[in-house]
Each structure stands twice: as structure tokens, then as C-alpha cells.
Length: 323
Picture 1 (spheres, helix red, strand yellow):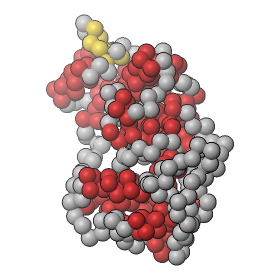
Picture 2 (picture 1 turned 90 degrees about the horizontal axis):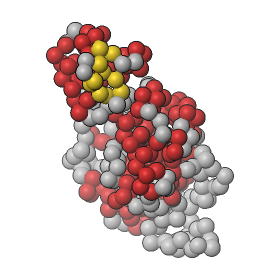
Picture 3 (picture 1 turned 120 degrees about the horizontal axis):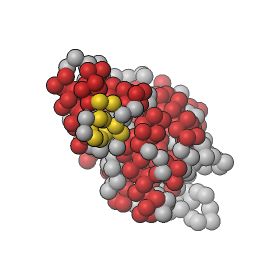
Picture 4 (picture 1 turned 90 degrees about the vertical axis):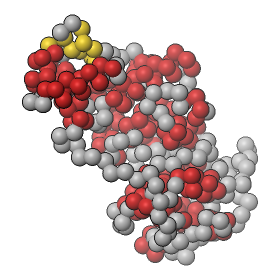
């Protein structure tokens, strides 16, 4: 839902970060604790271990295990190379509701078409939608275009390093604002997303139900690597993906867990069909568009009206086109 190009992760095997360590500008890492190594680097051995969230030594052991896991199992991803705030913003918006493999396929193409904020901000919504196809949740393409324009106009193309500033932008909530700052500037910002939630519920909240993010966030804060939060979050996300394929989903015990509705027959599918028709045919007569999309005319008309309100498309007399 992120590998530093040209420099080491800075995590020696078995290194443990601590939330109380203060970075020394002249030294990459300022260790206040000795190295602590887990008993085994085999994920299967430590995968079900419980760590006491109130015990600093337990948190250190968890971080040691996490660092060892990441050293051996880090996933190569294009947005983890040649890190720039623009590439971070694009990847984070793409990853909000789309699986990593699909984003890995589309991200390089999108970046080639729009290499920076100025290029994206100057594009038409139709061009951005065309580049976005295959990622789903097309409203995010407009959000990304609006974000680029705001950053160029308000901050001269520089991504703010304060999550509070980012949260005023469309499509950016608390988690995305935190991840953008953490990954763009390697700042120790606390945030939570699906994989992070999965890891912490599994290891720190075993046998507990109805776990709130409010309970998890203080534990994340205590465990957060202050020296290299970017790589620490990378490791959490990679480990969370590993866990997803090995155990029953711990997120089912989250107070915030919700099952996504099927795509087939959904409003999302109809919205996608509207976008597809306009990309293929260009400006289209309203009644022709409704007929092409499907036989549920009243439902399609309601969805088109909502898309007009959202600013995705425009109705010009009897013609529908991109805004």
C-alpha cells in the first residue's frame, strides 16, 4: 500500500531500532541498545509468537525478527527505486484500493507518461483516465490530477512534509498522508494500513477481538524505527503480505474490518463502463451512452448523474464528455 535507491537500508542483520533513539546528523544510526537477534530467522518459527506490547524488550525482539525477515524477503518494487515525492504520491494513490501486482504493472507506464507533477498537472482528465485504465476506482485518477495541480499551484511542486497539509488534498486521508511523508522524506510518522494492522493484531493482540486502531497506534509508535522509518514500514508491509498467505486473516478481528462487495454487477462496474465508452468513443450522446452501458437505464442514469456531481464527466446539452 516503497526500496531506497542508491543507498543501503541501513539495517544490519538483527539490528533493532528503538523509538527513543535520536538520529545523529553525523551518524546514520545511533544505537542505544545492543544488537538483539531472534532465536531463528525462519519465518515459520516466529510467525505465531506473541509479543507483549507493554514490554520494551518484546518490542525489540519483534523488530529484530522483522529486520531479519526483510533482509531475506524484501520485495522489489519500482516505486522503491529512485524515490521522489512525486513517485511516492502516485504509488500511494494507486495502492489505496488496488493489489500490488497490478500497480507494479501500471506504475512504470504511468510514470513514463507523466514523469513529474508539472507534466501531470498540465494533462487533461481524459489523458489521465486513459493512463489509469486497469487500476479500477477511476475517481482516484481525478484525485491524483487535482493533487498534482494543487501541489504545483500552492507549493510550487514541492510535496508538503506535514501530514496535516496533505490531508486537505482530495483522496488523501490520515493513512495516506502519513505514508507519503514517511516514504518521501523518511520521517517517523505513525500511520496504519491493512498490512500493518494485520501484523500488529497477529503478534500483539492475539486472542483479542474487536481490536481498535486506537489500541494499535500506540504500539506502532513504540516500535517505530526512528532512524529509518521508510525501511521499517517497507518491512512491515512485506511481512504483512507474507502473513496473509500463511494464516487466517487477523484483520477479521479488527473493529474496522469490512468485506468489499463483489465487482460484478456493482455500481463500480457501471462507472467503469461509462469511463471505457467515453475513452473509446469520445463525447457521446447521453441516451446513446446509457444504452451502450447496459439495460438498467434508470440505475445507469443515476450513476452518470453522480459522476457529473463528482466532476468526472460533464453533460453539455445532450452530450457527455470528460470534464
